[in-house]
Image 1 (spheres, rainbow, N blue to C red):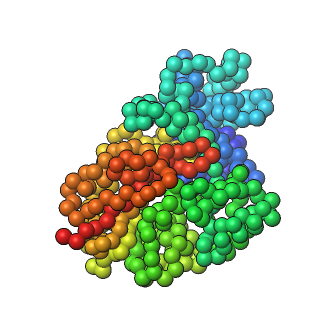
Image 2 (cartoon, rainbow, N blue to C red):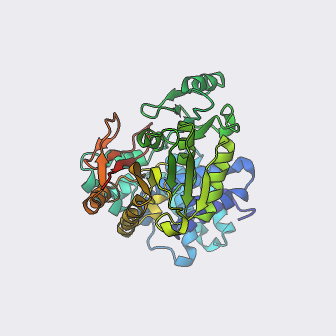
Image 3 (cartoon, rainbow, N blue to C red):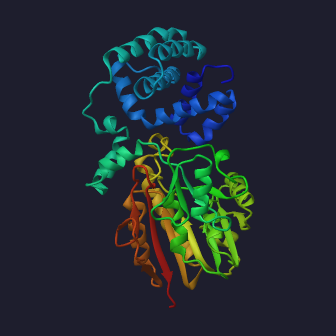
Length: 431
């Protein structure tokens, strides 16, 4: 990718996403090949093209007389990137057209420059076409539209619209270092507009995103970036000094750190994650915040591999899920997730919950969490678990947030506010 125009690099990133890589996998190497001042633009191109992929792709398919050959698929993505700029950016039209044609040449596809030029000139001249497809209009895969319509008949359109917006930047104040009001004053002094979150006690939402190095004392551990919905786990755990706490599926460590910040004097916090590649992120967060946890690489469901037999007072189980509540932050989910993923994910979720229940002390509390909006991964898992587990009791805290599913609390993504999340609180009874 070195030396290529930015649109050519963006097209190659998009092709990698279509082939199954996440943006978090394929975008960083691409960014590193560009001058630093070009990197935000490349990121915006890739995120924006993913966000509007199904609408852009619907338009492009209507403008092509026949699909491009598989060997030329990168040019399909190059045109999508250009269409994104035409429809959703302030970039001058002539620059988009000229530079996209030039990018086509650098991708060794000179025979397609005429096609690229013709398609984009027609798109600019005719404007965006009308469509009767919900998938195109809401820019989501059809299966996801249908599933949301079925699960949330009164909310599906709002969820889809919210998924196509940019998520706010939200901070969690390190309560060991600052009060929330104190840190709000520091932000004000730094010229950064912000307000307290509605539900998370240590949360602050910024009026506009800023680089973390602009945040007062960020490097010294004053705050972390974490969505308000994700912060709520500590309010449900009911932490107290002397407790032994497990954060299962812990990477990248935001919730591990939130647990340690929320309660001084915990006996021990154990953070495990199956991915060895992601463990350094947990360690980095702990180090920046000057916190201590026992970090271990392990499959949480395989308790024989990692558990020392000493039961936990509290367990946070933030399970692998479809991540359909955080599409605003990860728009590539629309391209990567398949409907066929949901049943296997639900099986993993129930397996994890069943295995970790054995490590919980009688009288202990387990908080089950997902960043999904699909009931199949959320309250239906809890119902399945309660049906098969005699010593599990569902607690229903009196909360001001989310929707009562009668087996946990569902937060849907809200514009200019929190992501979509699900929580259920379970207590282990003595048999």
